[in-house]
Image (cartoon, rainbow, N blue to C red; front, top):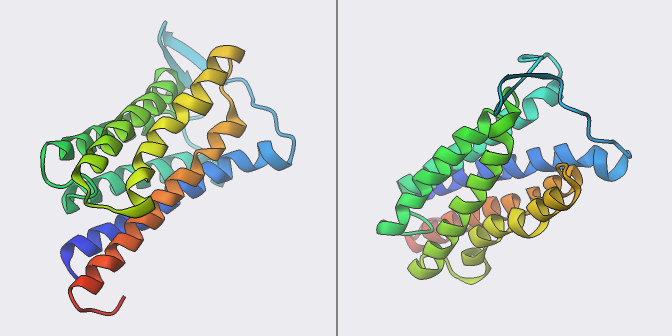
Length: 202
């Protein structure tokens, strides 16, 4: 197994974890009639809202940090592998994806501004990665469209609802998990292709 295929397999696992985190978040809103709870914390600055509970033993508290940490690791692994953007200029957008994931990672503790900013930046970075992916043609078939799908999703389905209702759409946010899982599958399958290319069993 080559270093590149190992990085891609790791990215595949990480992005699957990211997607599962979103699905876990969305599940109670889809099937249990859950309602989004108001934020419980305080504004330390007009644009900086800090949650009252900073650490919790409740496993649900850690779904977001774990899944977003996996998002960061997935972007790092793709950057190391030079996929799906190649090693040209488009690779720099994977660095932006890492920065975006770091900002998003802060949202369980500081939801404003990092929850909307993190989602926005992740969407932008994945659109740029998706455009670079189409140009590079490293990934083929359905896989090459997945990064762009991830990037477009919040701008098509999430942010318009936020603007129209004035509140985040948790049920729709949870559905973002499916494109992330698709990216995990794409990275894993691409690793299998590389292993096959080198004459090793897949």
